[in-house]
Figure 1 (cartoon, rainbow, N blue to C red):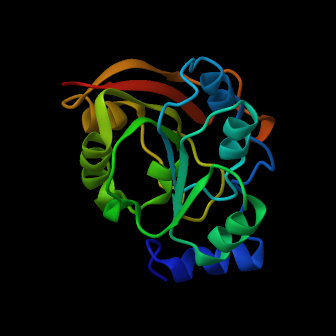
Figure 2 (tube, one colour):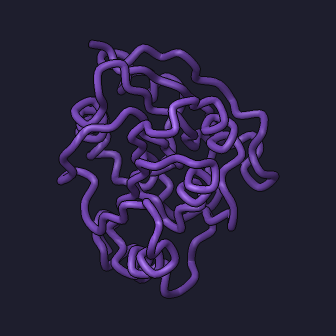
Length: 194
């Protein structure tokens, strides 16, 4: 089945076939969130899944948080879970988004999309970010499971994709991953060039 479809991701969630789901915010992303001082910053989480990071953002007082995912199943659950909160739940394709953001939090969404979309992903992030906007989070660089996605890449490939449009402030093995991901994640902070 084509992986960049709502049907594919609905099937994964309906079957409970979600080995990436940590049931809590990703520690490196939580750590990064704690460094953001502007609580009114516009923050986007693409391919959000269960959106634990969004819940953490709301708990910390952030007021402009958006999540997007193709899965109608997971987004219906998020609509219900976060009803009455400031969270903007967008069911649809990341590549169709409009608007602008100060931060994009990347929780391995880049590794979930087919690699043929990677160039378009970087271009879309550049388009969506305000001048000086930042994208931060984690990429996989070693496989967790034998099925795809995730589609992994090595450090050099990540650099090649982002270096023209972003200042690569940090890209290094993550030291605060959850145990099943230890040694498999790269932590990064990139800033949009003007």
